[in-house]
Amino acid sequence: MNIAKRLFSTEYMVKPENRVGEIPNSREAYKNSLRIAIPAVIEMVSISLMDMIDTMMVSRVSPQAMTAVGITGQPRMLVLSIFFALNIALTAIIARRKGAGEMDEARSCLRHGLLINLLLGLKITFFAFLFAPQLMGLAGAQYDTIYEATSYFRITNLVLVPQIMTMTICASQRAIGNTKVALKVNATAKVVSVVLNFLLIEGRFFFSRLEVDGVAYARSIAALVAFGLALWSILRKDAELRIRMKDRWWFDRPMAKNIGRLTSNGMLEQVSVRFGFFFYARVIANLGTDAFSAHIIAMQLMVLSFTFADGIGAATTALVGQNLGKKRPDLSSMYGKIGMRLAIIVAAGLSTLCIIFRYPFASIFAEGYPDIASTAAGLILILACILPLQTTQLVMGGSLRGAGDTKYVAFTMLIAVGIMRPFMGWLMVVPLGWGLTGAWIAMVFDQGARLVMLCTRFVRGKWMTVKV
Image (cartoon, rainbow, N blue to C red; front, side):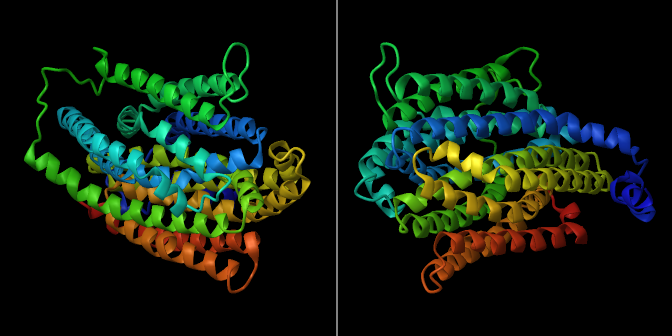
């Protein structure tokens, strides 16, 4: 009982000499975290489950169709990387301004983000559409998947601007702790996507059979639905982050400079992540369509587990940033530690489920392909070992991002994801000849390195002095 109390009680999370004011009791502190975390977790898990259903539907067409959709993942993330970086900056700034009670500044930050989305999004849409075949080839698409992958990539990129604006609005809402908005927006959109996939992939009722293109059209229409809901959330008269046409819609130098500084750090992080993921996926794609299909199946569970940690991390990011805005670094540290403890509990449960249900889960996606299902089940066993590392480092990274310490997070991602993951993946697959299993073992090194670097930074406390 005493050990549990020392681990989970807020009384032991902040040393008396580091306290700036009163520390909330454990019940109140965990309640505050869960109030923000639960809607974020529900949102992200529901999205992941819907994506899983999408993959399940397209997998029934053929392994080649599933691979064509899956192989677009990293090029698509590469296109979105600059906007992920922008949203990291906006989240840190808006959370800090919310804590300081400077909501006019928070709204100005959101308007700047939307303007940047519009200007950059149109240009990137054009180049992504034009160079789609080259990107698919670079990602490792083979002769039996490159045509479908290119078509899917082009269709989904036609709605890039509405999609990135939705991402920015939802990230801003999470920064002020309003995770219910993002839940409603994204959950509704994913339901629309699943329904349209049901109709379009195999051509049910009076719809034509579109297979992979059906998935693309479904996701594009769902993206437009999400944009409409997200836009309404900031146009309502009672919205805390309300925007209006009569607001100041041109760039303010100090705000733009602040956003640019944090975005540049976030961009280094995103480029490192996308580079690492891109070439890591390329190594796996070169193992063949069956191997890549097994990889995609196991990744469905990894993404699902990621969403649990990401939801907790979103709450931690908001609470860390808001309390630094209130000049309460002691509370920021406390909420970071609470997030880490919640993540460890979730990871233990998810790892247990992975071990128990790995074969039934893999069989759902690879019905009629027992070899692919068996390979995927083996990868899920490795995933059970990765999850405690992944969930904890995600929350630690969220804490540092909430504090605006994006430069160190970017450095961590450069070392662990940009360099270590692709190198270790190549080493274990090619020279050592361990195949797909070796590629997944490489992820253990990546996740472990991230955890050590981020936890070390958090414990040392330098992030508390970062200015945003």
